[in-house]
Length: 330
Image (cartoon, rainbow, N blue to C red; front, top):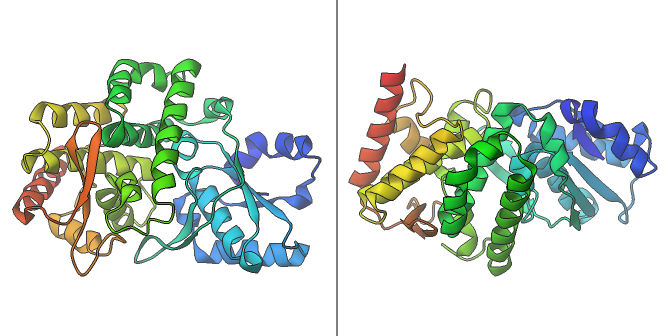
């Protein structure tokens, strides 16, 4: 089992006891996005080798998206692949990163540039673990819930507009419904394009907001912004650009931005980040093909599309607008 110090303090011993395991079966890493590195993956690999874990062993990820991604990546490459189980303990990991089989680590040149597709054999999401989440982490998870609604479930979007305060208050019923609908949507999309092998295929839709968001994470060196916070901003920027292209109604773009804001997520980039910073960092995105930047944008509320065929002037206008908001906020 792999976990981090924060999750270990709350849940490691009860989970080990339930599985009839001991502390020697657990490897505890520091917490934080900056820990999702090749160096930490190598540490876990060394530990597995030292424990003489065979190919029929099972690796368990107990934690949020960082632990899930790193542990899944290690499971994918250890002895050419062993089974692993996800026990996600954050809202973000329960609705997104634990489902779909994407694993990996970050690189100084960009997020998730080193990784593999490796499906977990099971995912156990216990909503009681969300009671220990700091409010900021809860909001970060809501970014992925809002993303699912924006790209593929207009009905869920309307429910989020109604229930966002209940979700922030950890209402069990509202959380269970939102998590289930997001997992169902993601599972349907992943089944159509498991390894994201189709250029502009269905699975790329799950990256709505992420190209902008990954640029923010790389700019801040994964130190000051949570992944969900960067995605939240990216969703607002994607909605704005979709509106400027004439694809999304202005009132629907405004609804998207307001919902992001109501979820207590940022709608302005880090102070000092410029349009040129965005352009440079977005050019490294994994969705760049044949030198052309592909973005996931919205055709309508609940309908997304991947495209490289957009007016660069509209992108410039979106970047200028949001970077200007950051300057005014500072």
